Length: 432
Ligand SMILES: *[C@@H]1O[C@H](CO)[C@@H](O)[C@H](O)[C@H]1NC(C)=O
Ligand SMILES: *[C@@H]1O[C@H](CO)[C@@H](O)[C@H](O)[C@H]1NC(C)=O
Ligand SMILES: *[C@@H]1O[C@H](CO)[C@@H](O)[C@H](O)[C@H]1NC(C)=O
Image (tube, rainbow, N blue to C red; front, side, top):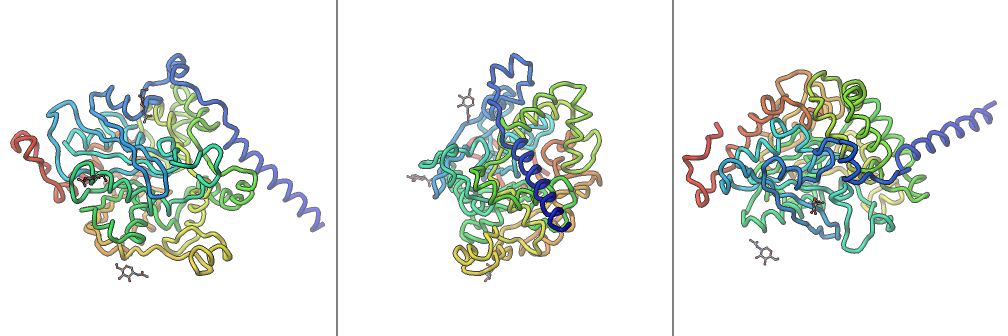
């Protein structure tokens, strides 16, 4: 009897592994922009960062950052071209996106609500980074992401150790500034804290950290779907790796293309596309405009490594902000200890502001409070005023202008000044 139960459970696991693999990895050819234009996809869903912002009247330059370990990451330099061209506030602001996202995500709520557009309109000199593994970080000086599986041997730890510091250094070099202000959403904030732990000198290159729903320990995550997905990927990481699968949820993948296709039809927008967000995160009816829902699946999910997802699976079970757990034997080799060590949150001496949502089922308020208590220099931890505010609202809500922007401007006001060389101060609106 017991034996039969074992066989049955093996079959069930095997089948679910195959279904998961089919859903995640059987990639149809990615549709070309011409095809999408013909099929009447909204332009903002397939244009890249540069063409999209230019279309809305902004000025964007593309840059490539090379990390110490050879990853090539596209960074976009965005300024308002509309009102007072040339006027900027100093120092530059680096913005870093969340898990399975890219710099494009900061634009998805549209010119009236997306944080990147609103901050550019307020004359900030914005540099929008990308981490390894998404479609703007899928290049390397030596490795081919398609053929060399080592390309994918990274998790959030390497984003914090290499990608964030390389991006900051690049921006400092290009602007001649000696510090940046840093805005990180979710993983983008978590990776910054890893940098502070691993490279304390780099932490001081930020004048301030604005952490929007920062993801570190995820002990109280409530989203069932996310818990299931990351724990399955954690369980199957070595099996998937053995059959050569190390990349997940890439743009052009099955799930992304289907959602992107369906969501452009209004009959699906509210029924399916809003519900996907509600299931991943939580319900906040009407917060995301149908227009945004039709755009965002054009580049979400943006891709990462299986290991990054597995690391999130580990974070669900951890009492602290731990490094990736390689298993006892390999931990001894990599860390010299049988268990994965904790990141040193006390090393994040940067002035820190934390803004998060009461209804966030991915980065739970209890984990954010724990983080705030663990950091040495938190000036404010605030919840967004709307009690229904969830995780993805920071990127997609139509209410960002009213509920998030004023806080971010208030935080930045203390840590920036107008570049007088370029523009008379009187023509610049006051931040207060
Ligand atoms: C964005 O699209 C334009 C026009 O197709 C292209 O010239 C540019 O290289 C693209 N940039 C990136 C980073 O893909
Ligand atoms: C930027 O880097 C280049 C090349 O390494 C160097 O020559 C230049 O002086 C740097 N500029 C600044 C402002 O640090
Ligand atoms: C963590 O960082 C703090 C502050 O920089 C330092 O005093 C402490 O020694 C570090 N702890 C560890 C375990 O490295």
